[in-house]
Length: 315
Image 1 (cartoon, rainbow, N blue to C red):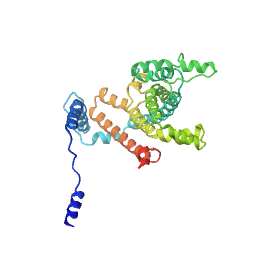
Image 2: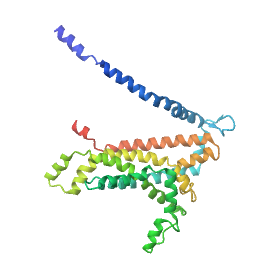
Image 3: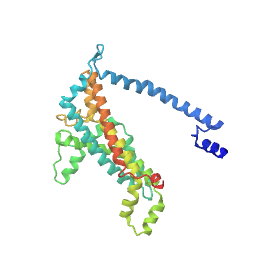
Image 4: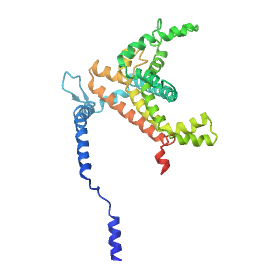
């Protein structure tokens, strides 16, 4: 009986860290060695500026004189700043439009390019190439494409007797034009979708065929659920990137016309490097971080209702 109790107590003890073998210890050392440069770089170039910007957000600093502590004054100021709400609305509008349209277009492209036809690799390369072109070159190209008088889009519309709008010149068309332009980078998400499509188990399609499912039923009940983690990933990454958009907007519209495309990133840039109000710019940046974290948290909360993980179903 005493032996059984002793064995029971021993079994009830929590298991410590398993002892690593010589090879495992060497791999562990190599792992920390390889990531050490990244950790040093993060501490020196990211963590330091992040903490510094948080401290600066409580000051009034023009970079010409020492910063003055002002407490919550910068955060109180943005509540009464109409451009803060304009920039936030424009960024959310662009984020929802560009990410929603981009998810659909890149997914459809991936479905088309997942077919087994001759020369499919060439087509995949052609559709992926635009996503690696420099942002400034893309901006200049789209300024010409969207030009009111000799742009490609309005020229095509004129063939059908339609007078195209001034895409980047009219406030009601400026944000839709930027959303249309954002499809230029759909090739990046398309590649991720392609990898996901090629990992869907084929036996699921075979089982659906045995049950009499047609192409649409297979797509809706097999492809979409199995691809939902990939869709969720592209949704999260795309929305965060869209809210931080800056370079393309600066070059194409500089926030105009009439602040119709004044995105949050551009507004922070103006406050910091045109008006030299570093304290207020830091406060805006931290508010943007809070908004991004809140939206991301909501997306994760909603994910449990539509994202399917095969491993969870197996448990």
